[in-house]
Image (cartoon, rainbow, N blue to C red; front, side):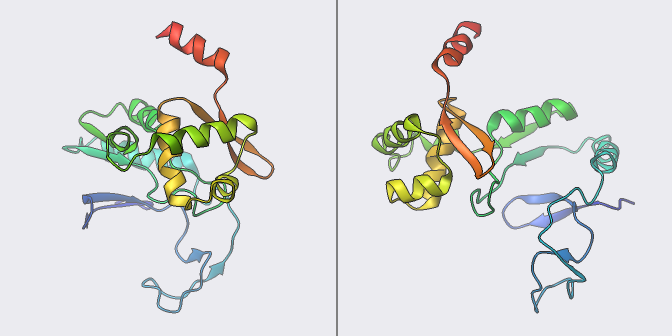
Length: 192
């Protein structure tokens, strides 16, 4: 019925999941001998729009007309593992929900809960903010400067972005984190 979306399929972690193929079959950056779908026919690192986004939107629109019982919308599990790629913020996920006008949606974004766990350290949060206050930094920069594992720093960046204390900017060398402009923060607080 659909060419680029598939499912619902059972998922150990998420229950039933809807899949979206954004890359044609066997176009891959790996030529893994044990791949479950066979030999890679086009080995490439090129990032491009392989399937027109309008086509994907048409298929998803048709699918969502069937009103699934519920939708869980989540982001990347491991942002930082692919250069210049980051997980979607809670605000960005909400824009997706608003675009599709979906009811009964649960946003899976751990940033709100992270601050309340016992292992969350305010001194690390403060150190990250102080570091990027001096100059914008990439995730790799922060890892080298602070001597913390990339996954640990990602947890704090996620919280700081959700709290609107920092923002991301794309530059030639990659994705940078910088402290949000104080004037911009004041305007946001007034408008709330």
